[in-house]
Length: 505
Image 1: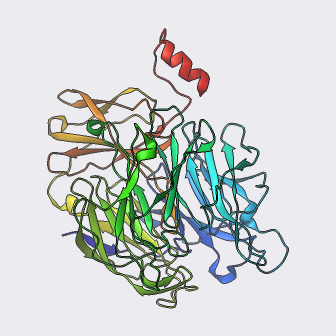
Image 2: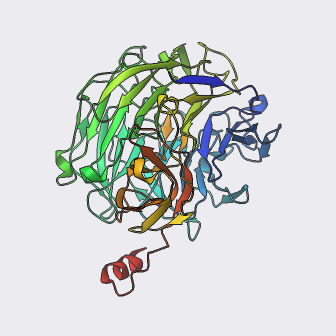
Image 3: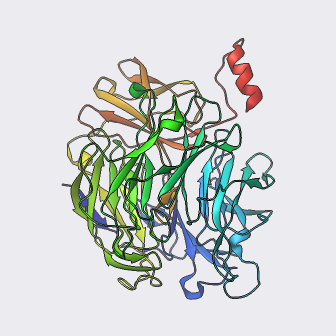
């Protein structure tokens, strides 16, 4: 039976923001709890599954990146957009204009030119070329909350922002909107954007919205301040990489959280005919919002943490029970319980071991559990209790689109599936870097496999990934981390297609 192990060594900060680094360790950052509204101070710390925090005392950053957005860029660095707002208290410009990058190789933060308008609780997503598309967030809180209606693109090569892009057609009124890059057969792809109880599709190539508005089947807000969770379900070569987005939990029209899930079923041939629908199997058993939905190594989805009632900044009734979603049968089933309440300001992500790290919950805004929780607990899924694991001995540190990649393993004959799983960056139950991509096995030798990286960039945007091998019992290997480099192309001299793509990179 799966279980949660509460770690004995605590962090020196709270796990509000989390990102999986190429070392397999986790970067956590948040405000300084002793001075939460100070826009010129936050704390960050690196945690390892094998030894806990790598330093006993957190590092201090001279900007408060609390309530920012983050995603992996095409150079392998982490973009962090926004931070703590201050205009609810004075006219002083807060960190909500900030743009930072974190280099996991040097562990250095760099601040770049500010965004022209504030973004407090924004979202960002990695595009086909490795640039980041930044949307949403508050641009002012005086005299009332007003959402930033424009978008910007951060270019990882020039380290600059684009001009402002008119973006919001009037439906993005909630904070931390969900967005995913979907493959419609075009080079750039379409953005799925969900806010409240509505979603639309945005063409990156034409910089325009498609006409339909897609409404959820049941009413209620799925975004902040009644944040649900959304994740792109596994993309499989056997299904031509069809896209489905799981939307689970969130708010209702009352103080209670939602006990429902819906699936956005994307029609890549005719995107206008996409729709929300109920799962084919069952609905979740528990009401919850502010919970995390984590894609596991085998492609199932872990739903953990959250609150049963209230709103984000006033959460009550912690939910300890977890559930697992099977994307094949589209059913939910009960799973093991967490140790601590994990409500507003918690985070969960998949580790290379195939386990999950869960952290966070802040003393402020959680009257149902007023604790500044600096602990981490680790989830061991059922699949790690089924016997010996396959071994992935060697995988390339860098891969390219359409490349035939060699993975060395003494268990080649037993491998049923190979997955490329994107390294997560998550906060406020909004995982802005999470996808599971099945890879086609094209050759199986005694001690190695050869698998094909998809050529379509919207299937797997550039950035940080993990290779997992899964045997016939669904048991995963320990992952090897890799970098999908948007600048690197396979040796295809004389190929007109690749000459065309090289010019578009």
